[in-house]
Image (tube, rainbow, N blue to C red; front, side, top):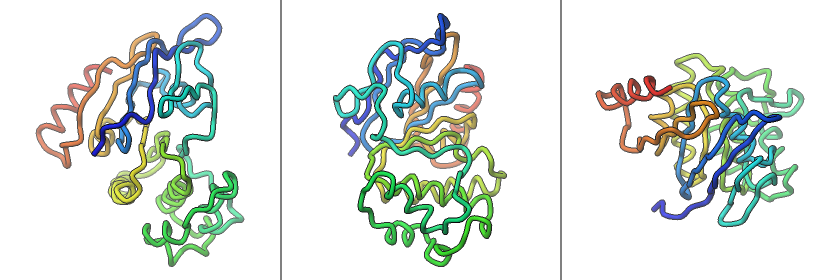
Length: 236
């Protein structure tokens, strides 16, 4: 049951020189939930993600992880970038293992690989994999951590439509077994609705969260999905 806050953003604002990019951001992320943040290019999505991950200290406000102020601190989230960024000289297994090496955490990599159905390819190099498979390895590398929060930065943007759909279904299956809290930024409205429990819209200048949609009950393409897509599109 999702009933406990794992992450809070309290009145977050950030400016470059004298210009605010984002301002007055309030967000309460429940333990084990999947939320997506949608916004047009230049709306401050990446800035917000960097603040959540501790790569950027906000000009104003606080990032709270289980009640503790972690503003500007790294190490409490895992991160999956837009591109796979796999090391070409390391096997699938060793690329996934990299997260454990960096954090010095002891994780059951074999169980993770088996659950993902990757046992047969664990000794292959990235050059032998398709784009979709490389992205899956990148995702498993991010999962190979004891961090509770996973940040996804447009994880499907480089994939074709068929591969993207397959990857999304695979991702949902894997996440159900991990109980991670996921925060994803994306341009894809349908993707956000189908994967997430909640979708937040980031817009205006300076950007703030203009609206929230509850989406956990939408499991496929239907009239409600189409109507919600149109509503979100008019607000962006």
